[in-house]
Length: 205
Image 1 (tube, rainbow, N blue to C red):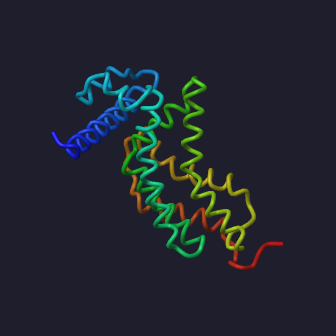
Image 2: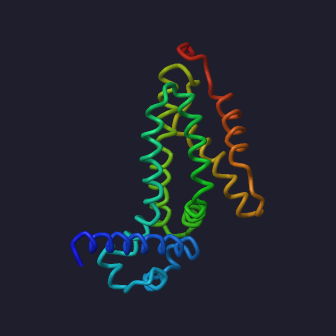
Image 3: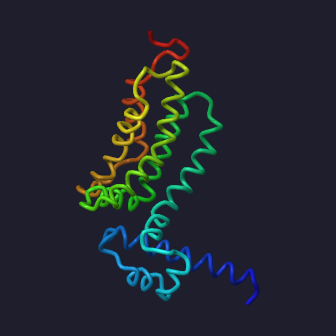
């Protein structure tokens, strides 16, 4: 087997482990998941898990963060091309709603770990949520500086907005009723931006 083939096989094995881990963590939560169950689902030897990931915590973080990091990287690249904080915020709302629709398991496990009595689980989720919400907070802060948005705490406003979007994912899991993502995005943009917007360039006194 040549070097490239070995490298491709390693990437494939690592990715299979991450995908298997995410599925079981979603199903059982962090503390209810064993490394042996992940190895069995991925179809690999348990020793291989320790070869790629030095601990269960590290595996959890990488399985959970990988979809988020890919999303944030792509979103930042695309949003940087958009002029004006209001249009950028509209783009972010659409992007986050599509994310929640495409990988609902990430939202589900975040809620599971947040409700956990384990302090380390809550700390991990806090870090994850802060990283995910940062682009919204930065865009709202930019809009305030430019006089396009009213003077409000950007951190609090971004939490409000994220909560408006995430609640539909929770509702779907509880009720089984599927919502229209485009319709949700449109309503969230209308409600949130109407309350936030100011006249661009004319800062409030």
